[in-house]
Length: 117
Image (cartoon, rainbow, N blue to C red):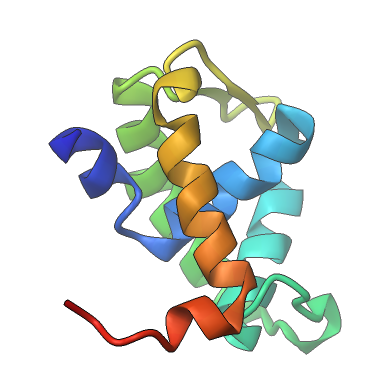
């Protein structure tokens, strides 16, 4: 449970997994655009036109050097840098329920406004 919470503690990893959970497969370039848009907008209705090249580059570097390898280490995803393919792996099923709880909270602003414990 601690590893799952640690993996999902970063918004970029959650956004990547939200995108993959909708289709089980994506291209790194499409993921970069979507994650950057979500990060800029603070929601999942991000505007791809508002993303500059510097932001794309920052997301690319963080995905390649941090988020993709970390998720692959836990067999949550598998990826191929040559083709740009990113796919869900068998370990995704272990964190899927927790990811869905995060997603519901992030998609419903009223849940985010609740008092913290």
